[in-house]
Image (cartoon, rainbow, N blue to C red; front, side, top):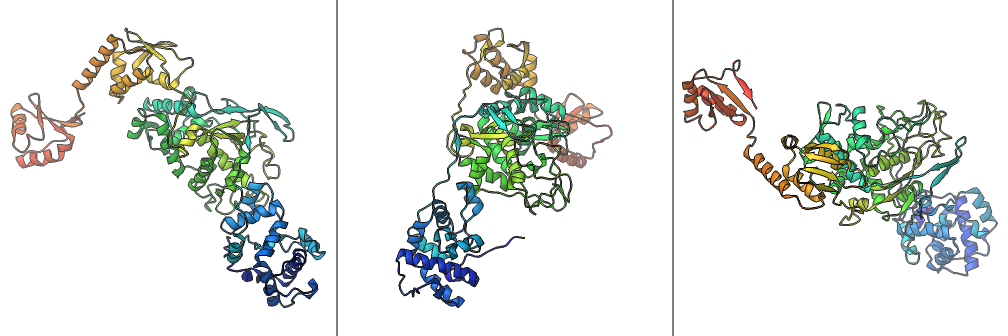
Length: 633
């Protein structure tokens, strides 16, 4: 159940919510403070001792209110506060008048005592030691709210809070120590720079789709094992973890689909670049356009579409957490949580490494905390619905929401090149599962637990609208030498899978680095929808020198050949039993504009004119006999 509390309009309204015992503690503290400060609020009767303060609740509230609405006394109290208490007051006064201890702790790493009812603080206050008194309790209710009149008065002299700062990593360590019992020791930390990889992988996988090589489940859209193998072969830097790397038999597994191969098939579907046709992905009109557009533009489109995508939830990839498909609908849709993470990423400094736990603190401190749980986690469980429920108090934000964030960041943000990541193996990477029920046989909760650190890169800063222009850190260089005999030699120092896949669409491969343009394959590629101008532009952009004259003439001739024959669309071929009937139809005033002769006994009717043709044919006194008619393309 969610409770809603209203801001108290005044100090008097706040104090009326306290019991008499709490009011006496407050009064005693203020009495000692008045004596020490020698401040005399106007019109306030200060007794000789704290025992002589008003005893009636209404009178005591009025006396305390006079103290709290006196600016000189408030300044004195503020000066007595320690740095943590001052920071809490600053956050409350200048951040909408409410105090969020979790957000405060994420920013400052600790929280001050604010509870007037705390027995330890009360005993200290009774001995007149004001510095032990929870002084913030004078200004903030138990629900973390400050009266409006008090906030206005404090705003005159309480400084604005410090900006949220991120504790960055100067340089990544080579290894990370794991302290999990039985797994103690150092493990290697592997850095993945994703900017160029994302651009290359996108173009390579679009080529695979165009070649009909990506099979998926018609129901879920998830890749088949064969499709995963095809994608792995073209990934420029491979998957985030090596193929075949797995945990122990009963531990969490990376899975056959891996991370990047799985992500790409869903990302392309979410962006509308592909559609499922007969168990395979095929390019949509936008997908065909993307083949000829700069990869960064398409990556940005995919990112924006993924943030809104509702047909997939990252929590479904945390398979050990059961109950996700319960009729109780325990999870909110992922859209708002993805956007909260994206908002936090957009406020990071470009090029700076931060540990993932530090990023989570930053996310919360900046006010982007999210919660994907609809019912507090009671319907979700590990092992047993009764004993392993994730609604118990010992289950933290990081157990569920943190795993969602790790999945989103590694599987989708890093795959799209928005962030660079540093990874350790997921097994034993986190030490937060020891108190959970039903995890005796596992050492992690997800394949994403090894996400150790992240860095917003240049591409990500542009995608997240930190800057108006994107200048990649890598450059496409002249990597091909095109010879007069139509042979193409690769000069690249490393393999370029997208380029190689595209060359194979219209060339025969003669060796590891030599291709030969073949007319038949070129014509087939054009027939499959590849524009000849895009092929020429591709070669020109990568050619070390201008085309040799023979190559230029070849492509000019091919361009002319392509333009000579055009697809006019589908039509129906009508067979007439004799030449006279064909002539009658083709020359009829009502029919001659919607059909044409084909030989002596055939009439061709364009598909778009077929209904009108049938109607006018009936008006002429004839009918099209479907049983003996036949259609062509």
